[in-house]
Length: 192
Image (cartoon, rainbow, N blue to C red; front, side, top):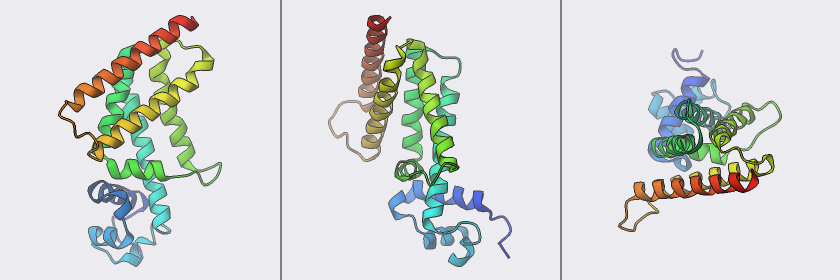
């Protein structure tokens, strides 16, 4: 009989929290069982295996990141929406590096995989942050890919301690977003 209080969602949340603390690459069923004060076999009543747990964490992280961006950009447009989305993503990655790594490691398992729906929702939230620029439809996908890549790269480097030069990382981030805002405005003006 499964332990009271444990369910797939609570095991996933505990795994995500542990991954944030120790790193996604170090996450293991034994460590999670120890955290939850159960024997390792007890976890298999709630998740199939480590791969299933990792995939569930990826769905959770992608959903949470989409929610963070949606909430941050609500009522914003143009540069304000871009800045809010960028700050939300950067903040999420810094606060949840393990679960963010799980999301980047995940691959859809089929057409009904909840990871696809969460990913589509996340991309929709990022795309909404770009709508105020009124880009030509042919440019929207390129802008979305650029934004996602840029934010991912910056946040991943920051979490890994990759910025070692004595200049404010916050200033660099602000400068980058300002430059992207100017570029998107210029692109929209040319296409409009």
